[in-house]
Image (cartoon, rainbow, N blue to C red; front, side, top):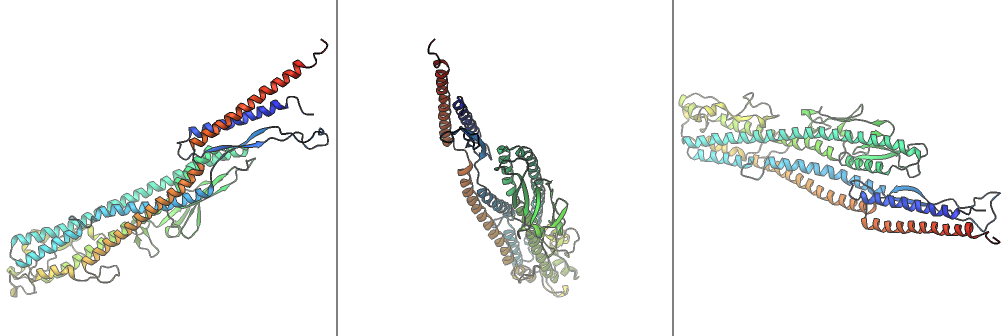
Length: 517
C-alpha cells in the first residue's frame, strides 16, 4: 500500500528539479557573453515508479509515477561542428600567416614606386646614357657615380630589411612554439581536473568549455587530431574523458603532443638547417625532420616565410628565396657590369698610358666579387671610383696609347648591360635584368594575391561553420527567458500541489474520526 504522504514527495521532487533547471537557466544567462561558453540544459528523467516488480508488491491497478529528477546537466554541443571549425581555423591560420608575411615583403620591395630597385636602376642606366653623350663632362661622371652608389645602397637596404624581418619571424616562431607548449600545459592541467571529477559521476561542463576553447586556439597554430580517453570510475555516460591531442602531418602521420594520462610533450622548432633555417621539430624527446611533419596552421605559415631546409638540403621559404634572388641579381649584375667596365679605359689610364683594370662595383668586405651568398648586403661602389671620377672607364680598347679621353663608346656598352641576357645562378633560362627582376616581383605579387584570397575564403568558411556552431551552442536570451517562464510555472504548479496535499492531509488528520465526540 502506498504512503499517504507520497504526493508530497512527488511534488517536492518536481519543485527541486524545476529549481535546478532555473539555476541552470540563470547560469546560461550570466554567461551569455563569456568566450567559449556552451549553453547547458538539465536532462529531466522520471523517477522509478511505484511499486517495483516483486513478489510482495501491492495489488493495485498498475505502477504509479513518483515524479521527476534532474538526471544530468549537459552541454549542448555538436562535436562534428567542432571538428569542422578547427579544420577551417587551421587553414585560416596558415593562410593569414603567409598573407601577413607577403604584405611585409611587398612593403620592403616597394614595387612599383619611385624608390624601388627598378626605378633606381633605370636612373643609373639613364645617367650612363647621359655620360655617353658627353664623356668629358665632370658633372655627368659624378651623377654616374652617385647613381651607382644609390643602386648599391638600395640592394643593401633591401637585403638588410629582409634579414631584419626574417629575424623577427624567427623570434615569432619561438613565441608561437612557446604558446603551443603553454596551451598544451593548460589543457593537461584541465585534463587532471576532469579526471578528478568524472569518476564521481559528475559532468564538469565548465572545464569542458575551457578545454575546448584552448583546443580551438591550438588548432589555429598546428594541425591536430583530438581523441578522448576514459577517466574511469563511475563516470556518467555523457562524460567526455581526457583529451588526447596529436600533431597531424600533411601525409596523415600522427605524433602525440598530449596524452590524457601521461602529460604532454614539449614542442621545439630547431634552426639547424642551411643558413639557420628550420630543419627539424622536436616533440618531447623525439627529433623529427620538418619535411616529415609539415602541417598547416599558423606555425607552418611562419616557418614557410622564415625558411626551412628542403629535402635537397637547400634553405627555401618566402624570405629565404627572396634573399637568394636579391643575391643573384646583385652578384650577376655587379660581375657582368664590372667585366664590361674592366674591358674599357678610363681617362686616368689614357693620360698615364697605363692599362689598369678598375672595377666599378666591389664587395665591401673582401673587395673582390667572389661570394654570391649575402652579396646584396655587401655590394658597394669601388673605392677607386670614389677617389676619382676619371677612373670611370668610358673608352673602349685595351691600349691606352690608342684611346682618346673623349671616347664614350664603353659607356654605351655599360648602358647596354641591362639588355643582355645572363645566367643568374639558379638554373633558370637566360634573362636580362629587367625581365628577371619583373619575374621575381611578379611571382611575389601572385603568391601574395593567392595568400590574400585564401585568407578571405578561410574567413568566410570559418565564419559559416562558427555561425552553425553558435546556433547550436550559444546562449539565446530569448530562449532562456522562455525557459525561465516555463520552469517558473512548473515550480509554482509543484508548490501548488504541496498546498493541495496539505489540505487533503488536514482533512484526513483533523476532519476524520471525529464522529461521536
